[in-house]
Length: 101
Image (cartoon, rainbow, N blue to C red):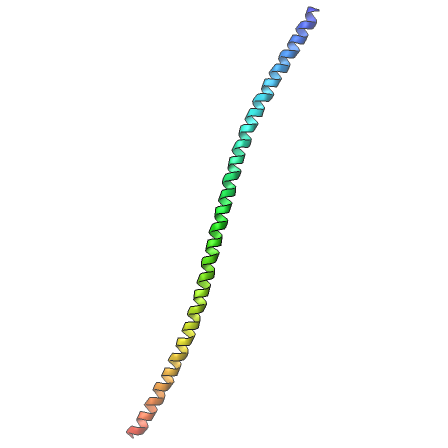
């Protein structure tokens, strides 16, 4: 009978050891999960910040393209005006030469 009690006592001790080992492992896993959750939060924030930065760059690029279009139109208008002035200048020189003759 005493041998049976010793066997039960040893079994209970083993169960207690296993229970403590499981508890410790569970605690370690919880710490790991906590660390991973923090990493996830950090990475999500990084992605969000990157998306915001990309949106800002897209807006700047759109604005730059619009400004570029506006400048191209202004350049085209100035070139047309310059061409008209050159024609007028040439025409005036021709008239002056006719009057001088």
